[in-house]
Length: 491
Image 1 (cartoon, rainbow, N blue to C red):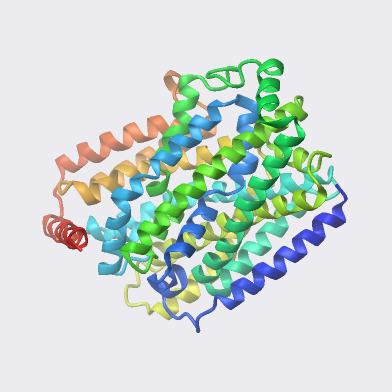
Image 2 (image 1 turned 180 degrees about the vertical axis):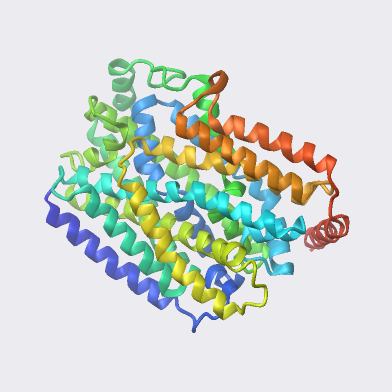
């Protein structure tokens, strides 16, 4: 595809997205909750679209499509398990929202620090998020780089794509914080779902219709429609990929922080319902996209090229291809924005200024805004490594965040949990996951996420039983949640 078409499409997207971000401004934000949480007043529809755009990033139409291309229909099961795991929000969503509103929490790590009555818990939780989310943000930048380079056959370089995405992420996040990100997310989510669905239907029709489509897959690529099929999805591989995804909605702070933002419990329910519908449709579209690329381009060097090659092929009209491309870029930028905002708020609130509790909200906000571009640059530098298979890298990043799951579950359901248990489980398990990822080790054939979660659970429970729990805070915290949940159920 001619590079000029791509740049025109990007220019139009930037104009509309920037205008949307600017119009979302609601006075001058002088507080952390105002800038990073939208004053906890986000409506149901905007929350649902923002949650969807944040979660379904470059991972889907590039990563999941590429995983389908490489491993077959097992990718569908992998992603549907993630979607099923989002039902954890039914359990934890109301609890996050209630304690966030009552105690004024801005970050999930701040919540853990207060619940376990130890600021070190907040510090180690925040730093763990930084270590594992920077690579995840880099994956989104890489997705844009691969997309623009692949669609133009290298006329637009990988670096140009990543620089573009980095600049857009910084601009959108600085305009008005979460409000601008949420409103641009909503615009982007609508473009994503409509364009991708229409184009995949068009492509399937061009390949002979739904019956011929699957007949061709079955005859030309035997095993693709079964598990383990081509051999990619062994049990260990499937478990290693799906386990981080099951707990994604509570382990990834850029997602769980969104549970603080709805204006009411009703808006929280609408957010979850809208996301589930969006996610199911987008999953089917992405998997079909990967199968279509397999039919048309069976010998690609890597699955991550499946979507760029398909979009630039004769099967897809140029205008539709550009619209889908914009949707993917928008999704990637949305996820980077959310990660930048979350990590900035965590580093500011729970690390940089932890020794200065008397710092004003305005001062905290200044520090947070200064940290935003630093995070973006770090992600950009990591993206320049040009590592392949976006889906696997995304899951690998989330595997490290699994170590925070036991302290989060304990915060709401186990009065006996302690700060020492939380700290040891996060630090030791986090280092273990980092080592296994760095050395590509698979003890007993199992991935880093499996071992990280097992060790984290063992340490959290064992050390907590051997140390003293903050009984007064636990009773107050859990009592508030229990009482408020009863009130809402009675309404």
